[in-house]
Length: 250
Length: 201
Image (cartoon, rainbow over all chains, first blue to last red; front, side, top):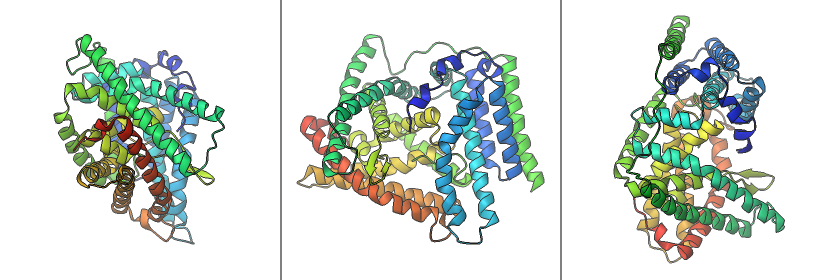
């Protein structure tokens, strides 16, 4: 996993754009995304899956997301599908089964399509907007608070880890399997976790002093306009259409 | 575990999401206000540590940390895992949204098993207790993953070099690494802050 990928294309710049995807209200967009992902997972027809993938890709481009960003994010995930694909294709020996190839392509298109949808969600609004939207979707407040705090402190821990890594390298650390290295990693994990607990105690005190009562306060989400509803309904109709079309094709 | 959307069958998605939903509901019900920051920060801490690649010969693996998470958070591990995996799915696109339930379940159940072992069995060596808990975590994850794939599609178990066989072979080195890592980690924590290790399910 490469943490640089999150900041590589200056997420903030992408969030500030003003396309139809960026203007789409968060809750409506999240519901539409979830609906479409469920619809995609339900599909088995390769032509329909590839058509859906193409439509989502064009939609992402029309939202002003750069082609290189989309392409890079998809390429990063490609090795996972290759690792799974090789045994599916060659596990049964020669000749290669057409059915296995079709299954692999189906799974790959499903994975890539849902991946694109998740990219659209995080690149067309800020994490704060996602959090605000989720806060008004009847999600338990404890779960939302954990999500919000974990996201906030994630980057601090990543900085700590990168500093530790630099310190290790400057002390002639060699990246290889040995009992000493495992001990080092074990103690590093223990250190990170104890630091997490210590920080959490300070955070809790700070939150209590600001009136925390089990729920992190959020600003009101954007009002749902008729255009937002129309976009969501269109996605829902598209999802139902591809499912019905598949029934008709098969 | 990072199963992408579409990798497992719809009935499996429904079944695992329902079970995870139940486990999550139970865990959330028991969460006290003061535990929220601790669960959040441990969730972030585990997330970050799982980014580290551990060397094995020419390649490397990422730790699962199911055992360690179970030991430290008990039943609350389900929440931490769910949030950690949700963040990994939306920030890195590792995993998926429809597979969030199954991915959580694959690590949460072994984490709870590791916690039960750690708190039920009395062994003199804290390192050994941690080591076995780490191993239980990996074995549990692999067994569940293999079962989920086996019941999702025959393509995953087809032939000698099938996906399932390769998963079992690939996870063998992680068994030792995770055991050592959990053992050393638990030994270290027990010296610095032993109270952290007394969480029960």
